[in-house]
Amino acid sequence: MIPILLDTDIGTDVDDAIALALVLASPQLDLRAVTTVSGNVDLRARIAKKMLMLAGRGEVPVAAGIREPVLRQRSFLWMGHEGSKIVDTEESLPLADAHGIDLLIDTVLRERPHLVAIGPLSNLAVAIMKEPAVIAAIEHLTVMGGVFEIGNDPAVPMMDYNLGSDPEASLVALSAGIPTTLVPLDVTWKVRFTQTELARLRNVNSPLAQVLCDAIETWWPLHQAMFGGQGAYPPDVVAFLHDPLTVAAVFERTFLTVGKRHLQPAIREGMFQLLEDESATTFNVVEQVDAAAFVEFLVDRIAHAAC
Image (tube, rainbow, N blue to C red):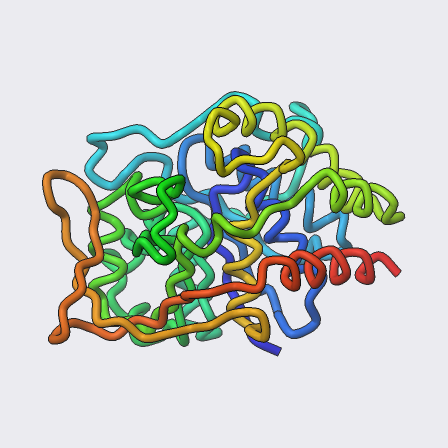
């Protein structure tokens, strides 16, 4: 089993919740802690804790981390639906007493986990600045982030949200020398959850699967409103699977092609970039995906976890 710490902005885009469900359904992964980042991190932590308890994993500590980008010159995305159909407003859920940064540092130094970051890198950056020893203690870092124009799809945004929303944090975290795998937007953009998969998941007899379906149905119209005008968004798509694919890259790569790139993290005109430079640090970069195979794997894994 691979010990992991999941750092997430769960609650806005539903793919974080699907990613956590995949973690909980995968016996190859040993989830040691969850930290939340961006905006109302306490609500995000409660969402994660509720999902853990529904899966019978309430012992996993969850703590709220950094609310704002490290230089406080920007604002993180907050849409107002976060927590809907997952956690009730007055529901009491036992979160860790520690701040998310301290939980991250303590878990990393004690257990040397693989860190999976599926949100902005603010928590990791602040942890590095507070306790540089975490750099050597992180076994590996897997990040959902980056845009490399793989396949030259004009529908793919020029910048991914995770690395672009707090560029200074991304610069600190990805310049630290931690062995890193990037799962970029170019690739995750191809992996989509449709109404067909949602119907299959709705037939899974588990409280976690049902809550997950409710969350997908809440996110679906919001996502369509944001992306429906783009030709790359067929009407039957209910979610993009950015973060679940990132989780899978930690332990199951049969449907992935991974290459190596020399990349220099930089900020140019206020925007975070990963610049190709043969003298720079080597990153593992996911370059191709068998999308259909991954989606089938995901649904099957979550379904069988309920048995």
